[in-house]
Length: 231
Image 1 (cartoon, rainbow, N blue to C red):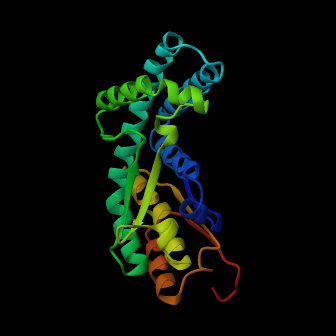
Image 2: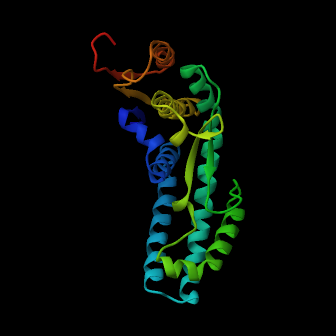
Image 3: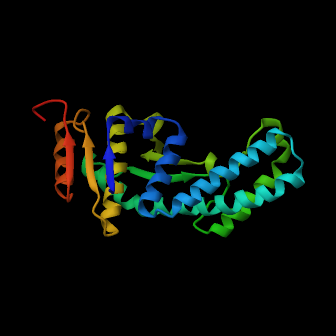
């Protein structure tokens, strides 16, 4: 069953560690295209194996095959994530504007390589160069320093990072907009996911609640829970 689920814990997407946002991107990519699961799994295995070699202080020659494999898979994963962000961006901007009345929210991709693109081969070349040039630094630190496992989804409000700049209510609206944008992108692709909103009204003022209700009315199937009977 395809479903988009929002709960109060999703505030961690905004305030929490970058690993949560990476997982969000990858899980959504898999929801849109299940074959991406193999890509993310292969990349995790490559990083794990390469880190083992680094911790054993393997020489450059031993690392080279894993540099190539990690760069190839990682380049494709970066492309997948950036393409997904480009797709979801207009829905995210419009949804945040509908909920908050502001059009100042946007998404961006922060990468460990200097110029991430939607070209997998270009990403692979940059990763391979970065990994080849960081051998001594990685041996000293004991792990792989470059690749999509080090990247982040940037959430911005008026060009400032939401994590440090936004109020609690704005952060809540950002997290909710992210999930609703996911929903609308899937619908735009011809899918009909179930929209599940758990205790969604608790942090929204009356105006934002009204906007959210209008958005929810567009859904084919919606499940909403509330903690207060009047809601």
